[in-house]
Length: 292
Length: 292
Image 1 (cartoon, rainbow over the protein chains, first blue to last red):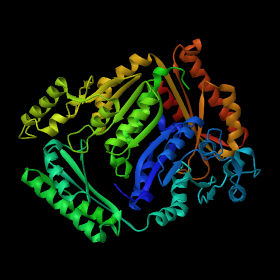
Image 2: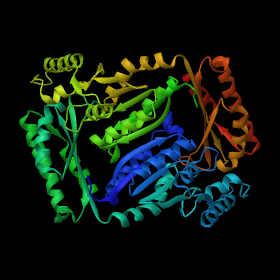
Image 3: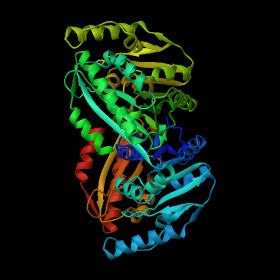
Image 4: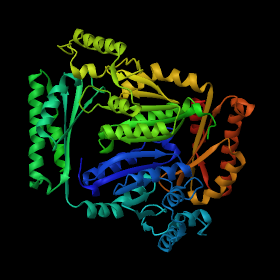
């Protein structure tokens, strides 16, 4: 666990489609992967329905835990059930007001769409203006691929960031405006991971080996085992991770790289002793290198 | 929103792999889809790390909202970080005790694995016994494809159900033991859905049409629009859903079928009037029929 409070994240996803099984939440995987690679630690994810009370309550509960970042996704569009900003406004007790920058961006988007023959009418209807009504003191975040801007709002110890639920828009705003916010906050971090498959030994047989190795490498390396029922026979996947700021332990990145290599080779030796086989260590190595 | 309190669900997922972006949470889509098709309404999903306090706090918070069902997934295995039952035990203040039925099942599983040449040692080590240590008053749920049993525990107004995170095991226990629990509780429900694509009109232009149609069909049909940036040009997907017990409105399933057809044809007519095009209504129809 990081002692660095600036690395604490929570994520909130808003949308009935996620709660009736219509949509697979790929945004959650994308966001947690990127945040982790930047040195952030996601403590909790919450998914609620498109209902005002549900949204406001969830935001209030999260703010009471005071993460440094709260990333909210979904419900920023023009239709009646896009009510994330209204819910947020209630939770932080800041009224919705037209943000002039956001309004200029949204207006521009519709003029552009008209030029490209996509729409015939650029009138700023209430549905369109709604996307520029942000809680007071918010900063709009430019949306390079869609219409609804993202939103950044500081509340107490937390930077709240709202992103659209459409994956392409979420990713574009994140890359364009959110990444730098996080890097500025967390500084230079290192995240390392490594994974490999073990064949022929079950998790319960591996458990004492894991306990032994992890005790020797605590608190540096986190070892996680996953039974893989999608493979024929008994397979367990090992996944090793570590994440810390470069100055941590006063030893830098090489120190953690060495530790993760140590855990991997001790686990592999233990697996061999138990009569099992280690599969795909090359792939795992390649994967790890690509993430350093 | 259902007035039926017996249809209220919350879901809790436990596992660091979900919070670092290693694993895409397909269990959440599978569970919410099946629960919805049985007439259940999932209000909230929460994802927390493999940490005792995180698990206990999340369980306590969910129980304070008193859903009829709390489905927990992940952390039932034999390794050191499988601590879901310990976290649950703390949250409901019921000690972990060896459940004789669960112990017999787990023992049998290892004997079976030995017979099939998968393991050499059937000794009931602490890691293995752990999977049979359930909070007092729990009922174990048989796992037909893996080792760790599921768990059913009633606490206050809530039926708590714990399932493994491995998808094949989660699905098998759900199909074998959980479905009937839900059907007994909710009774005969109907869930209908229908979806179709609109081409050439953006969401903000469609918003007033949606408002008009939904006002006419409230509270029966829920209309949701999703911008689809994965299609060339402007596309919006409409998704119509309704879910209610068969006796509701005193009119039965045909009544809701008629309503959903009504919404669909009014939206399609509106789209044509606005100069747009409706795509794949046949597929949507087929999809809908398969879910009735």
